[in-house]
Amino acid sequence: MTFELPLPDKDDPVWTSAHGFVVRKDGGVVRLTGHETFAVKVTGEQTDGALAFMDGLIEPDHGNVPHIHTKEDEAFYVVSGEFEFLNGSKRITAQAGDFIYVPKGTRHAFKNTSPEPSRLLVFYTPAGPENFFLEHGDAQGRRPEPWPTEKLNEMVDILDAHNMVLLPAGDWH
Image (cartoon, rainbow, N blue to C red; front, top):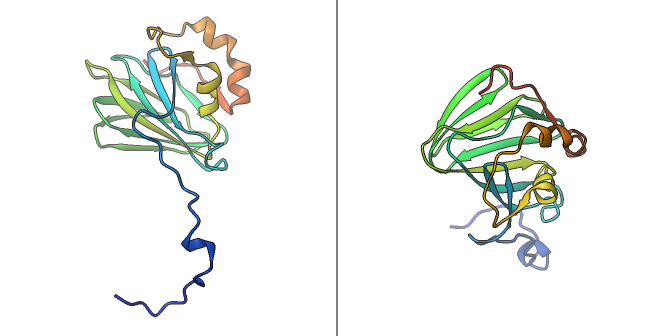
């Protein structure tokens, strides 16, 4: 097939520059945050701040607390199991293959409602919140334990520095 389109010159770096990268299945840095185990697969440092990506394994009947991101959009892809999401005041049940998008400044949370640990992919645009997990998550090898309210209260300033604001659970689990 031949196209009659203007093309870059054969010496243009578009033909030879390889600025992309691959992260293998076992790649990334694993961190525990309560009953969540996240592999931070892609950071803003790798994407010039454009995107971050994490692969999470969430224990049954657990998830995060309502919060907002003040500067980043967040998206989720359910790989396995079933999750309940809070998006503003709306509750959404999501199963494997479902995608959820939450724009910045929107109250949201999730909980694994499956009887087994379930996988959830998390995307941030622009990147940034992944650094919270890298800097403050627990090292791999420990048993996932819930973060008590006291720990979350101690992290208010830390979360603020990562553009995250915790909100009262109110109508959430």
